[in-house]
Image (cartoon, rainbow, N blue to C red; front, top):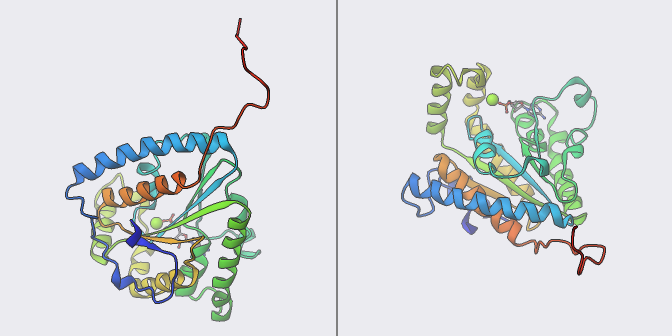
Length: 266
Ligand code: AMP
Ligand code: MG
């Protein structure tokens, strides 16, 4: 999994990352079986994270339309106890959100002790669509990489573990998935004509993603570039790296505060 992790953005090139990679797992069946085992493991670890209450995990999911952010939440995190999870979806900002700085709407959704927050899009939209669409002047979005590094470092310094995922799909795969959204009546609700306009700006978005990763990948807040053309592989990379991350936290069930030795419930 290490090859997908970016802890130092310098010289990062998206072109070095193949969206179709499968990590040597040669079938969907094997991939899905491994994901099933990992999600069970993740459930145990989350229970401990919650009981322990000394750590918190922020998971950021970013990617082009149809890259599978929603699918990843459904599949890779399916075994988690909802009580300990907060999912925040960041859409186009509302009027009050636009009237504030771009981190204002984000901060209330970061995890508290024992919790996992999953961001479906995030503050990175403010250097992605905002940059590509020129929604604010260049000097404003340029300054944001620094703010974002500082904001994330502050969260880490205050006890949060951060993992940021870029779900990397190919242009061809996106075409198939958008077409499926149009053709399949049960998927049509997810499609907007505006998605085609965004697709026309594919290269600009790839460039904006590359720059965002270059400027904000750090050892404390790494990006994981997930080869996501195969949905099972997307879930495999996410589940493996989340399990690894939680295993690295040295979680433990707290000692009872009162002496319970010899106590028998009548
Ligand atoms: P979806 O994820 O398909 O529900 O779409 C949400 C839309 O909101 C996407 O087109 C995002 O690019 C857009 N969006 C999210 N955050 C922002 C933001 N800060 N500024 C402008 N558009 C945003
Ligand atoms: Mg959409």
